[in-house]
Length: 490
Image 1 (tube, rainbow, N blue to C red):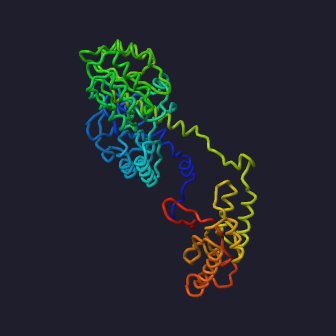
Image 2 (cartoon, helix red, strand yellow):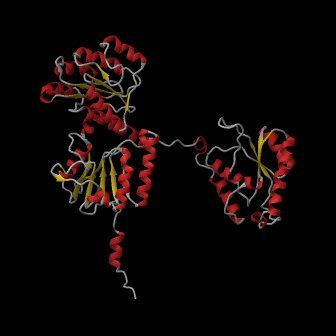
Image 3 (cartoon, rainbow, N blue to C red):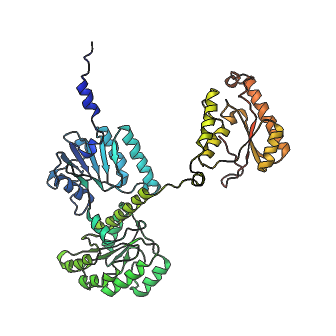
C-alpha cells in the first residue's frame, strides 16, 4: 500500500509562485558578465553583487577566470550549483543556444537583456521564435528579450543595467527611429561606435545626397564621404558646428553622436562651447563622447550642464542611443490603442444574436462544423470583411446569383457533411457566363454522386443524406497579382 501524500505538502506546493524564480531566486547566473567598463555585462553584474538579495551570483564568461573579483565559469554546465535564474547579456544570435543549455540544466527563469530581435527585422524575429520554442520545452519563464532587466525593491534584486537612461531621457527627446548619424574627428572611434550600435539593434543613418553635397562644401576633400562622418583630426570648433548643423537637418537621421578625440588641433572646451546652441534639435537626441579623461573634463562639464549627455567611450554612447530607440519602440506598442471596426463604431456591438442563432442551429442539427457560408456569416457579424457569397439550391438560382454578383464567378459545393470540396470535384473556377454556371452546377453534382457510389471513404455517407448536397455557393472570382486566376478555396 502506497504511503498517502500529506495535505500540508500539497498546500506548500500549490502556494509556490512560478514567478518566484524571477523575483526571489536563490541563485543567479550572469551569462555575458564582463570586465569591460560601461558594458552591459559589467554594469549588470555590479548591480547584482552591490545590492545583496539573498542569492548566489555566478558570472559566466568563457574568456575570464574571474570578473569583479568573483570566480567566473566557462558555461552554464560548469556552475557548482543549480541555478534558478539566468540573466543573459550576450549577442542576439547566441541567445537561443544559451536558452537551450539553460533548459538542459533545469533553469526555470531567464531575463534576456540582449537586443537585436524582432525590433531588428526578420532575422531577429526568427531568433525570438527559436527562444520561445526552447523555453516552452522546459516551461521556462522569460522576461525580454531587449529589456532593461528586473528590479525588486522588496527583496533587493537589481538585475538591471545603464540607469544612465534616466539621465539621457531627462535631457534629450526620444528618437523616432533607430538611425544614428555619427560625427567624429577620428576614424577608429567611429568604427567602435558603429559596431556597438549595430550589435545593439540600431542602424547607421544613410546620408542623403543633399547632406553629402553640403558637407563636401565645408569639409576637407579627404573627409569620409559617408557615415560615420569623419571630419578629420585637424577639425576646429567651427568645423564641428558647421558639420553638425548640416547633419542634423538630414531627414534620414533619427539622432546624432558627436565624438571628440584629443589631437594637436583639438580644443575640447571650445568645441563644447560651440555645441551649446545645438543641445535641443527638434525630435532628435544628441549625445557626445569626449575622449581623453581629465584633459577633456571641462568640455564634458559644459556639455552636461547644457543637457548634452556625455560618455567616456563612443561605443557606450552608441548603445545608449539604441536603448533610447528601443524604449520608444516598446512604449509605442504599449500605448497603441486597438482600432475598432467601423461597424462597431456605428452600432455599438457586434451582431452576437446572429452568431448565436447560427451556432445553435448547427448544434441542434448534430453538427460540429459550420458550413463555409455560416462561417462567413459569423465573421461578418464581428466586422471581419468576407467575400460576397450567395447560396443556390438549383441551376436557375446559381445563374441568378452569378448575374447579381457579376462574372466571372466561382461555384463551390454547399454541404453540411463534406468540408474538403476539392476532393470531390466541388469547386469550379472562372465561370464567365450563364451556360458555364449551369454546366459547373451539373459537374459538381455528378462528381459528388460518383464519389458517393464508388469511393469507400464517401460511400459510407449514403446517397440520401439531405446534408450531403444542398446546392452550391456562388462567389466572385478574385484575381491575384501573383497568379493568373485564383479562387477563394477552403
